Amino acid sequence: MNLERPDLSQVDSQVRAYIEALEAELERLHGEETASERAVATAPLEPSEPPTTLNLITISAGGLAKRTPRHLYFRQRRGGMGIFDLETPENDPPAFLTIADESQSLLLITTHARAFRVPVNNLPESPVRSRGQLLTERLPFRPDERLAIVLPGQASGYVALVTERGHVRRLRHHYLGDNLRPGTLLFEVQELGAPAAACWTPGEADLFIATAQGKAIRFAEQRVPHSGCLGIRLDRDDTVVAVAPVQEDSSVFLLGDDGKGALRLLTGFAANKAPGAGGKVALKTDKLVGAVTAAANDDLFIISRLGKMIRFQAGEVPAKEGVVQGVNCMALRADETVALTVGQMPVPS
View 1 (tube, rainbow, N blue to C red):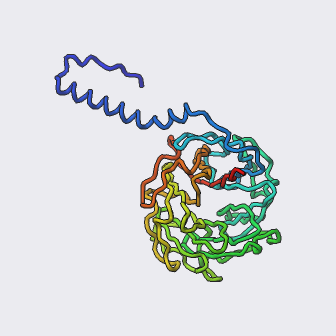
View 2: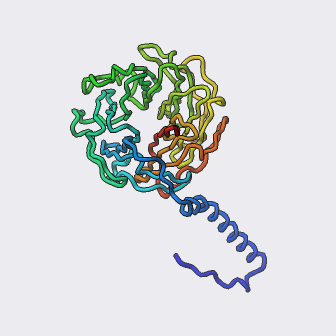
View 3: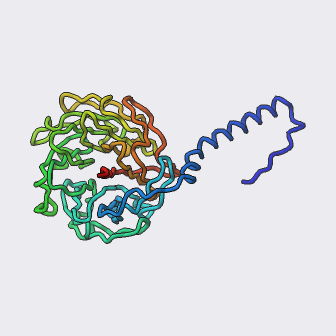
């Protein structure tokens, strides 16, 4: 609506002063809202890395997937609006992000706790903005079975797997290796709940488990028995959304669905002596999307429900030891963030 400012010369002086004060405040708020966008628009984009065989893999909730060489995503400034990535139907938004080399396989775990492996190069290489192909059409999924977890395959370490109810299990890498029988059942969902999050661990790290309410717990992964155990005690209306391997000197990037994130230093988040306790607040947010271990020189990749992707360095997020609300990491318009991943940048030789 295009309105012209009326003549206020005949209006009472107090009313006119009040209107002018409101106009000034609106102008100030508008300036704050658009400052980061103007900075992004004027800052030149830089190539983030030389050509690489690493791929950023984007997958929708329904299994529509594509892979794109990671170096084709240019680094932006924190708080930008990003670029369009995976094109999906409105009722099938993006849900998973991961980075894997074209020589690796993807480890897929379903809502029924069944595991599959798919070679990365089975997905055709695609431009940044493009449609994917249905990743699950070649897999014997059951009618009510959907993707729950996507990880790159790995030839060492353990997979720490956490269910929506907070139960945690550790599986050695060879159990999920090249000889994995498609559809192998990892545990009984009726007993422990559906898979919610997973990560690779070296075997001697701490596990950082985070929930949708922004709460988290940290404990030594070696405290988890072979048969698994309760990792975090949840409130009735809460659920697990992420797990990450951490050390005492690590930092964890936490992202809310409103595009705000924080880099929490683990020196300010004490470890529990054992798993199974209630979580403590890690980020003040209405809904936590995820959490990943990230160093200052690593790149963060975030995707929104509308398929917009942003890449920026974790070092642009102020590192904090205490609980914070986070800073703007992605500008959103009638949108929300849905997934993230981290790319560890090579150390220059």
